[in-house]
Image (cartoon, rainbow, N blue to C red; front, side, top):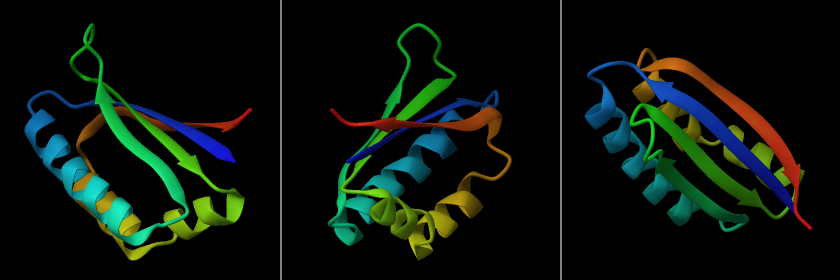
Length: 95
C-alpha cells in the first residue's frame, strides 16, 4: 500500500471555497476510485489555515490513476489560487 500525506495552507478569506471544493473531491474520489482506500481532508485545530489530506492507495498504480483522473484535474482547477503555501506531498509506505 502507498500512503500520501498532502499539506497546504489556505489563503486568507478562502477557507469556505477550499472546504467546498474538498467536499466535492471527497465524494468524487469515493465514488470513482475503488483502489483508493482512504481520502480524508482535515483542518488543524491549532492553525485554522493549515490542512492535510490523508490518502491510502492499494499501490502506486492506483495513485497514478487518482492523479490522472478527470476529478483530480477538476479539483486542481477549483483550488488554483486558494492556497498560501503548498501543496506538498509526502509519500509513505504502509506497514
